[in-house]
Length: 108
Image 1: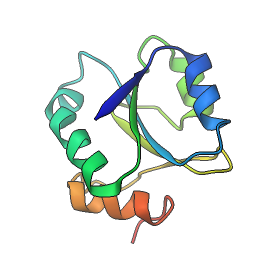
Image 2 (image 1 turned 90 degrees about the vertical axis):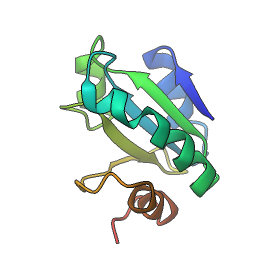
Image 3 (image 1 turned 180 degrees about the vertical axis):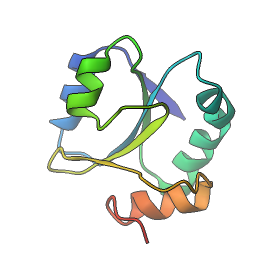
């Protein structure tokens, strides 16, 4: 299931936790974000990784600096070292996103 990060502090805490995760930076008015909601649950099931979402439209400076985000949705793999790696591919299929996450933030 997808969990919500409610504040920049929670995002930082996750990055500092030493755990792998996927964080989707979204905006509630973004149609692409809305269309992908169901895919994130499937991604969690496929990867076994925790999937989080963070509302970025109200924290633009923070997400640009910390989460590689200039547009929505932006999908980031968070490594054990806290580095956020942006999913750059236009292929938004669950299989492609899962492969990226399972490869530690590398696109096959």
